[in-house]
Image (tube, rainbow, N blue to C red):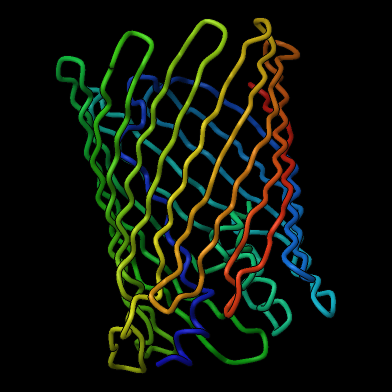
Length: 368
């Protein structure tokens, strides 16, 4: 069971959860093209890892009700230990859509992941991918490719005095792919089902508190048509406090992820003796200062406090600070930049290792 567990951990990437509050009533018509260049670097002891990513998004509003967008993010990563190992190339392309019904209280979502990215890896590339999958490092492109995925879901909201109540549910069908270039090995991640609920509370005209809860149920993964793994179900709690002011606004975020025990085996899945998933807690505070009608600067303080699992490994304590801004050059063309520095420690199997990192992300958005 342990052999399967460690081999398959790299393929257990959670699906994105759409929380129930999505701002349905702010649905607008627009067509935009945005492109960024991101650089992330981490250093832990004698090891280093870096990634250059190029996220590109095209958003197209067909009309007041139907919105589509296309997202891709090629990336090029390098891991430096005793040797230098690389992983890079095109990524999968995600097509997402949402349809707002005429009553403006229900939103239908749908999407497809086109397997255009690199998914079959050799042993050296697999080693890089394993590091990129570390949640605490939060890489822009933790994986390049996987199978054909199809998702659908809905969100409903209801106003009640100073509250906006929301509920959502979604389903993700996951297709199979071949993760190893050197072996005839077909891997099919389990499907996922998620539900979420939340509330927006208008504390005042300019202050709003948003609380969301989501729960994701993971299906059983198969390798060559044999059940080999089932990820523990995940509970995510999130609170967001927004304070809007004429010049200086604030956004405070708290998020906690709790995951149950995994199951592993070959044909018959057995729950692990202890929970190999640790608690993931995140905090951040963002200040946004409006210099003039065309320019805004931001400052950010954040922390990621990930506890060790029941085997006393896998934890991390990371603090980050930085800032950036955005500027409108014309009525249709915007540029933005974000710079952050990180420091802390991560539990690398048998010991806690000092960690430092840097992130730079910048690009443009063009309104067509």
